[in-house]
Every structure is written in structure tokens, then in C-alpha cells.
Image 1 (cartoon, rainbow, N blue to C red):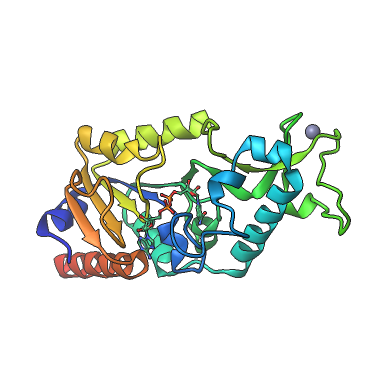
Image 2 (image 1 turned 60 degrees about the vertical axis):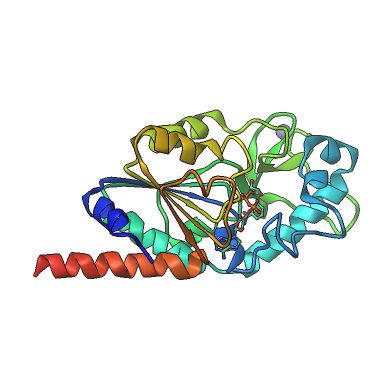
Length: 251
Ligand code: NAD
Ligand code: ZN
């Protein structure tokens, strides 16, 4: 399943980076945008996850986020998330760059995570930009919308279609891609920019780039190695293989 080249590179590597997308959380029961069950009340995510939609109908967009938050609160990290935490412990310089907003990497115990698209559990005010946590937000049963103490509307702190990514986080992600000796692109369709450029950038800078996905993607022909399968099955196997190699080389 894993090439000798990959295993050799990982044995030597100090800097390993993993870019993750919605596919990594699919086995936890969080639907991907492009998969089945990605729809809510027949809306496409693009129709709701944008600022214009929010201003036009904040209640509808909030209902969708409340539905997604409840879903995410009910689910648990899967073996793929936990295997990434084990990988984090194996390398001097390991980080995760995620497009997920579901907080599952952190729940699994990951420490160094760059969240490119924000976090669904955090909110911010459209007027004063101040952050609040979900717990602070009182959703009245009535039609009232969640508001900041300044009176401004609160919105989920996620990056919507057409919005800029958090620039500092993006810079840190590109820095990591540039330093990576091995770069994983896991469970992402690699079509949402600028995240999709990260594996390309990493490879250009000399990393060995490995894709793990349920099906081939637009970058499959470009990467050094493409492993087809579920991340929740493949990642624990990779960890087991590395552990086995490490223990046999210690003997
Ligand atoms: P995507 O929905 O475009 O693609 C998901 C990818 O995961 C697909 O290529 C699919 O083949 C693959 N996949 C599905 N199940 C898998 C599995 N078990 N193992 C390995 N691969 C699997 O997701 P994306 O590329 O991450 O981008 C969509 C955007 O939607 C992101 O910006 C993200 O912010 C947002 N989103 C986030 C979540 C979340 O936080 N969990 C969920 C849906 C969408
Ligand atoms: Zn405010």
C-alpha cells in the first residue's frame, strides 16, 4: 500500500505537513459539500455560505449553521484524526493545515493546526469584529438573531465563498508547505483555492507529495503518490507501518 520511497522519506524526515479537507471528517458522519447528504433543505452550500446570502436572509443562514453545529457536536473524531495526532508525535516539525471548520482535529488532540477556513464553533460581529464562543450566544426561540453587545449581527467565524482567507494563517500554511519534506493532501477535492495550491507549492519546493483520497482528484496525476481509499483506514495503517519500522530498527 505504501511505497518504499515514502517510507524511506518519512524515516528521514523532520518536517511533515498534512493538508486535510472534508473527506477526513466524512467517516465521523460529517457530510462533505460535494458528497451525498451535503445538501440542507435543497440548498447548495454555495447558496448559503456567502455574505450576500447572510445579509439577505441571516435567519436562514443561521439555521443552516445551527444544524451543522448540532451535527458536529454529536460526532467524534475517527481513526484518521487520531492517526494524524500519532504522526504529529513522531516528527520534530509536524503541522496540519485544514480546510475543515468542525474542530475535530483539536478534539482528537492535535496541537499544531492552521485553520484556513475558520471554525464553526466561533462567531464574530460583522460590525466590530469581536469574537464570541457559541456558548455566549443566546439563540432565542423567537425570531431574534444573535447579536453582539455592540448591537451588530453575529456571524459564524468561517470563510465564506468570495471572502479572503485569514492572511497570517495562510502565510504560515505556505511557509509549512515550503519547508515540508513530505506533504500529505488528505480527503480534499483540491479545487477550492488557495488551499489547492499548497500541494503544488510543496512539490515545487521539493517535498514528496502524497495524496490520500477516496477517489482520484484533479491533482492525482501531479503528486508523487496517490493512495486511493478511506483516510480513516489508510492513516492508521501508515502509523502502524512506521511504528513497526521504528521498533525493528531499534533492535
Ligand atoms: P470537498 O467536499 O470538496 O471534498 C471532499 C473530498 O474528500 C473529496 O475529494 C472526496 O473524494 C474525499 N473523501 C470523501 N470521503 C473520504 C474518506 N473517507 N477518505 C478520504 N477521502 C474522502 O471538501 P474540501 O475539498 O475540503 O472543500 C470544501 C469546503 O467545504 C472546504 O472549504 C471546507 O471549509 C468546507 N466543508 C467543511 C466541512 C467540515 O468541516 N467537516 C464539511 C464540508 C465542507
Ligand atoms: Zn460588535
